[in-house]
Image (spheres, rainbow, N blue to C red):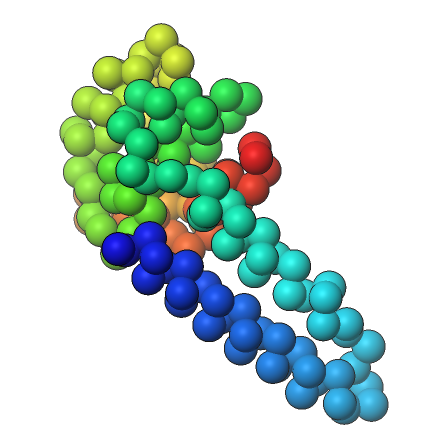
Length: 145
């Protein structure tokens, strides 16, 4: 249900972006085409659609983690735990427990992954030891799709 709501919201955003670009193209100083700016929204939507959060943790990680860096894997684990919800807070202990259950695929957990994911704008830490996804986290899926 939440996945469908997220997709519906992204479609609304895509329409708003298209409307804004159309309005901007009516002004003589604008040379931006509609398709040039509408593609990132479509890319985000397709990345989210490829992230099947109904998959159990193991197959989800095996499907998406191949070729990812540690910061991307950290974001991926957090995304599965929260089912892609950018408002859900997750404790670091929960993330490390999930990570350690897949050590063979993910490798050893390094606390630097958290900082590097924050530096990329994929996650945030509103409180010590608590993490949330940021809207830009879907970059990790579109880069590795």
